[in-house]
Each structure stands twice: as C-alpha cells, then as structure tokens.
Image (cartoon, rainbow, N blue to C red; front, side, top):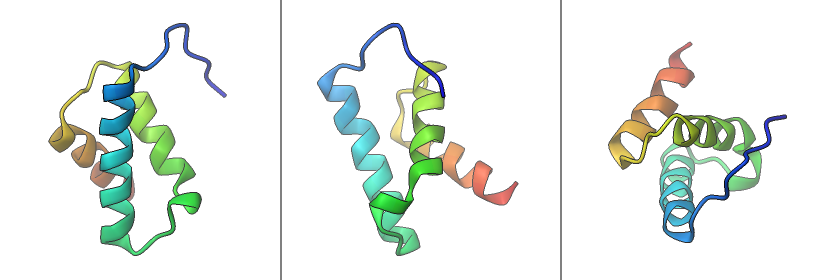
Length: 65
C-alpha cells in the first residue's frame, strides 16, 4: 500500500469524493465497494491530476483494461 508524504487538502479531498460518488452512482455501486476506484483516484491525484474530467477519464480507462 502506498503512503503519501504530503496530506491532501480538504478542497482536493472534496474533489476526489465528488468524483468517486458520481462514478458509484453511475455504476450503481456502493461507495464502500469502490476501493479500486478510490485507489485510482488517489494515484492520479498523486501524479498531479486535479481535473474532474481527467479523473473520470482515468476511472473509465482503468475499467476498460
């Protein structure tokens, strides 16, 4: 499991939660079961992605593969 040296600011946590919640609603998936999706979002965030669209695209790309 990855550990991050820096913390995620509250506004960015809200961004990640918003994207995850929207994804779960679209896929009719309980948020508690979206651990892989949450990991993708955190990974993308750590790479510098801050756009909702790019985060959603990352989830969609991982779903295909």
